[in-house]
Image (cartoon, rainbow, N blue to C red; front, side, top):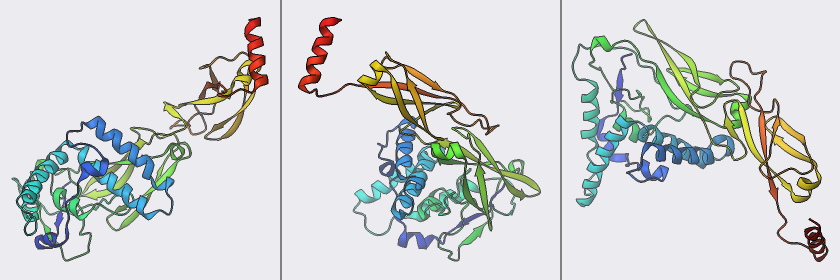
Length: 337
């Protein structure tokens, strides 16, 4: 698809836009590799996810910043451009930081990158906003709005922005599918969830089915452009969970039991995503022994009525202190072994 790129009046940027330090937002060094960036993102996304901070506007804003930083630093092309901007911005600061930074140069470069070569085509843009309805920041739009593969954005301030016609090779005129990363919690993956997308003037409610996991793609029909169909895909990323580890449709967890239950046997209450269940512990259970709870795992993506299993690994907790009587009994047992 060919996008009709939209830009703010250049002078407006000089007055209000601040530089965003995406490395600082994710808490990583500028030399961080892709795995380090992804690990930092997932940790912060889990902490500030709206589902875990309902009604907390500050957490919601932080979550948006985290996603924007990851959008840039996880994309080699965007990261390279951002690093170039960072070098120029740092040089400007070292020079005494007099006057406003020349954002115009960077906006013009973005425009030139998008408009090199080919005939001129004017087409409708698909305004694909951030899934949490806030869109990206002015900073992101200015620096990346004109990059090949960048997302077209409307003026965040609703000001009189100017539409520029993009010059692209007609052989590349076919619309490409758009992919956006979406982070969901394990509970959302278990029950299914939804997100709100803004596509042009339409608000679309997108359902994410139960059983979705890392790499699952949810297709959203994005409409037509130049008579050609364009789809939007939500690429699911599952946030880490403190209780369970997911492996396919199976879940794994640790369950603590005391020494006496391990030796004598008994029953313990095990929390699952579908409610608590009682697990029978046989006498003589060993530390690290694993029990299978059939059907207590994740629903299958293609059949939400079929479930994986939950594997509960026993963690025996030894008493840290003993009463005088308890010590006497243990000493007596040790002599009878």
